[in-house]
Image 1 (cartoon, rainbow, N blue to C red):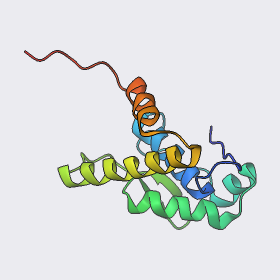
Image 2 (image 1 turned 180 degrees about the vertical axis):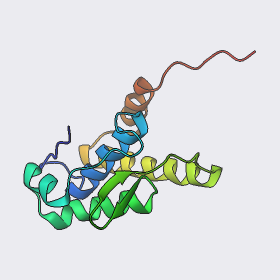
Image 3 (image 1 turned 120 degrees about the vertical axis):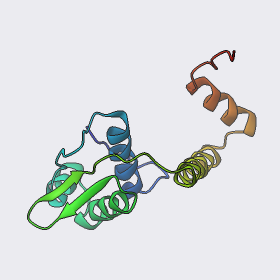
Length: 126
């Protein structure tokens, strides 16, 4: 379900965080779903437990998961993000995308073209 690319310029904890966040946001991980224990996931991915723990801490800080002693880490109840949270999240995603495109040596036009291919077509306005 989760994969880490050791050759990626993106740190492993961020790869784990981003993939778990995407699974939650897509609805593949539903409210109350239990995430693997830190040691289990670290072993499965060949990572240090601290790497997975950092990803889980960042997910918790973002309000996506809740960690409780003896109960593990579960997907948090979904609250609708505020406008400020949405803007902050979009800015974070844009920074991450820009960093990857720079690492890959893409031009601005190539990066924008790749981004636009991923967007659904605009709906006509009435």
